[in-house]
Amino acid sequence: MHSIRRIHRHATACAWLAIFAAALPPAALAQDPDPRAADADYTYVGADYSYANFQGDIAAWHLGALSIGRATSAGSFIARVNWARRSGSSGVQVEADAYPGLGENT
Image (cartoon, rainbow, N blue to C red):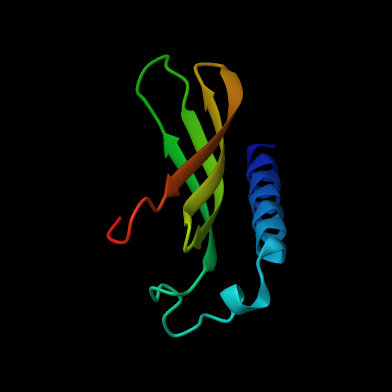
C-alpha cells in the first residue's frame, strides 16, 4: 500500500508540473539562448519536495512547493503554493512576492 501511495504522489506532482508548463508561453519552453537579457521578459516555474525522517516517535515530514514567476521590465512577480505534512497534520500556504524595479539600477 505504501508504494502505491508513493506512485500516486509522483503522478500528482507530474500533473501539477504539466499544468504549470501548459500556462507558459511557447518561447519560455523553447529555451532561448539568453532569456534573462536586460530587455527580455520571461516566465519560470519551480517545484520542490523535501522529506525529513527522524528517529523515535516523531513522524516524518513531507514538504512541497510549486511556484511560477514572471520577470518583466516592471520587476519580478512570483506566486507559490506550499504544502506540508508534519507531526500528523497537514496544511497549505499560498504566497505572492513582488520585487518591483524602482529605478534604473534596481
